[in-house]
Amino acid sequence: MNRKTLVLAVVAAAAIFAAAVSAAGSDDLQLANVPSANTRAVGYAPVSLYSAGLTPVVVAQGSMKLENPDGIVTNYGYENDVPSPSDPAVPLMVPSGAIATEAQKTEPDKNVYLVLKNQHGAGATVDYGTHFLYQGHEAGALVNGARQGVITRINLDADSNHRVTLLADKDDTGAPVNTIDGITWDPFAKVLLLTTENAAAPTYSATVDFPSSVHDISGAIGRGGYEGIQNDSDGNVWIAEDIGGANKPGTVARVPNSFIFRFVPKHKDDLSSGKLQVLQVLNPTGQPVTQASQTAVNAPDQVALHTYGNVFDTRWVTVHDTAVDGNAPFNANTAAKAANGTPFKRPENGVFRPGTHFGEFVFTETGDTNATSVENDTAGGWGSLFDLKQSSPSASTGKITVFFKGTARTNSLDNITFLSRDIVSAVEDRGDGLHGQLNALDSGWAFDMGTDYSKPGNLVDRFIAEGRDASATIDANVTPTGFGKNDGDQELTGIHASNGDPGVDGILGAEKPLLGHDGWRLFYTEQHGDNRTIELLVGDRNDDEDDDRRGHDD
Image 1 (tube, rainbow, N blue to C red):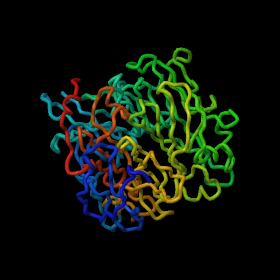
Image 2: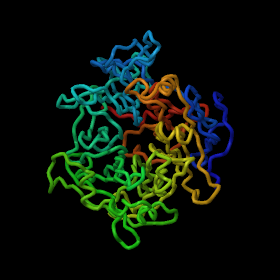
Image 3: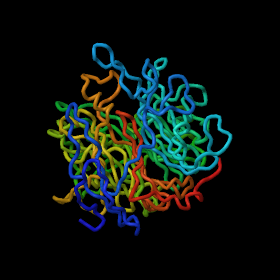
Image 4: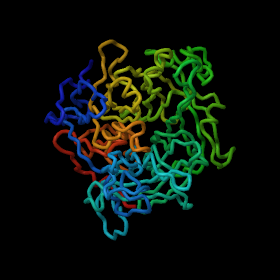
């Protein structure tokens, strides 16, 4: 393994050792390998383990009260849709000793870090703070038959009374915001872009100010199982879709059913018109790899696509053009299948590799999250990392190869971010079922883009071994459904490294990350359990020197 590979070391539970990240630059990034995942045992509450040099700091958690509650939306990670204690993270005990239904958790999801000036909270008349973390929330209580979604902003400079602001729970028409999954900042249109992972729900844009103006943009960009969303330097919007497919005949393995999309706006600062394209992979005979060609168990196209060393041609195919098809919302998944796009097994998120001028896009494939599925259908069930290379972000053709093929040790890859020029991190979303099958909770992994993982012995390094907090432990002990509507084991999500630059130079992939220096910071969120969002301090400090130059007035 080369010099950029993470250094192996043993990490003790509560001790976060002082081994610092080298100040020489991101190419010298060295963390310590956490040797094993935490096991999943009922009643067991392991603490999370981290690489040496990483110090976790909770910046918000579910019980934190909003500075501007609205109806049942009262707390950062909970909606008080049922009677509950003032701190809804504390379970309500009934006389029999059984656990009563808990307030609905909202599951804060992916993160966007921005350094901004002149941002106000509810009723504020003066500036306070410049460092903000924006999130959509993936779950919500049923209100008139629909889930109540929310968009929040964490003020990293504020006290607890002003730490979390409810930016919006309604769109511009007054309709409740749907539950949110993906989020990114578009520096050209100067809005947040948010996805709902729901073909029946809008794709949104939202302003970063308070109160946020939330607008349905799915007449141009479409609706689907959209999850990951990311800009490139040309103003295009890349989207990874997450929709599980039907079972393959006689198995629990799933048929690939989700696509990689690219929206090419007519004008980069206006998302109301343009073309939506789907990625199409061509097999060695020049034919598109389609859903039909991957439906059979161990279908040749699917096996070839997940074989190390194979390189396939790709092209982008337009599935919707507002100039021709108009601006009515449409189902992107249906359109992609009609255009012979290439589906994957839940390609949830992607990010551009720094130093490639947005010519290299790495995306995760979560897979089936079921150990049984790989017994008969071996290709893609554990998930993968794919590497797509093009001559430019707007190029019509490219090349794709599987960079990492998942295993029982490293699988179910979901959120992704580069930690340096060559080290990309991806965190797992195994789910309770796979936790039980493999007796392992989720992990965060650091992949070296210079390592050949097809070679035996070249293992990925773990830098987070997720634990289980009090709420998750209680859920895991209550069968069959915990509190009745809240999940059990914690999930790693929202891994996000950024210097907060709201300009074009701040698009992820434009600059080489320098964690712990020049304003670069690292965040992730624990869904389920206490719904905590955590900053991982790298080394002994976070240097915000010169980050004021990145702030802008809104």
